[in-house]
Image (cartoon, rainbow, N blue to C red; front, side, top):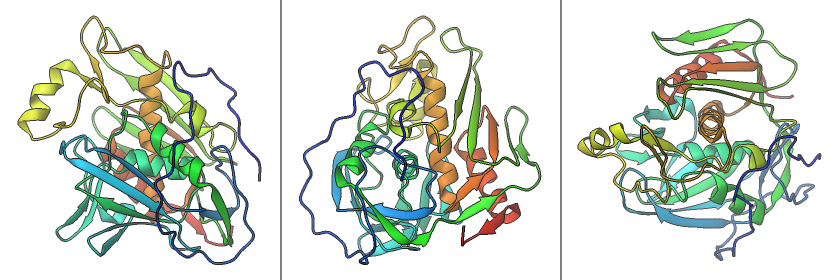
Length: 319
């Protein structure tokens, strides 16, 4: 399987490093041909899982509580499944229950909050099957990017499974919109995502980023891009019991004339939007073969788009 390398600008101060693994009891994985990868892989034909379990611990962005996730191996066709207190919820768009400043899946009274960075990392590194055991109400925010998750997945390694990756093909234009944003998908020979960001703000303005999963490295191009917030939004978030775990250590705060930290890329903000889109669209449970153009979309529109792809796309489970 091909190892992907970056063709674009290297990030500032964001070298991925292997972390010391927290020992865990690995889940059982069927005996199939396998290999270990040292870089994020996407666009492969065969399903993959992590070779061994790995744990990350930190703070929940919105709850402010201690949070941890352990990513366990899983067999082919299992998909990504979140587990807490003995209850499981599949990471599928049909289980999305909230999109307020993040993506939450749930069933009944069980919730798995702010899963988009972890989902983007699994998708970007080509991991189709895993059991994600969560302690706490949400995933840890880490440094506000997907870097720590990618780090952990690379450390755990990857195993190729005996099952073809599901592919959903867009055969005609598909469109969702509201008064200020839209997502358009058109037929294409391979997967491609283009995001257009436009803020009426002196520190942001308009930015565009293009990502091709089978050519570009998720680790190099997207994983290091951090979440951000306008300073004017902070009071409102706190009033709604959100962002209680946010700080300048895990969020880029943007004032009218400066930001809370140096950007890792000149276009870090739009890269983060692409990363969120990768995570949200991965809740389809399959690779989307299309060129997706998103203009000013957020988690709610990403989920609406993914639901429509699930209904309108052509599913090929033997790709």
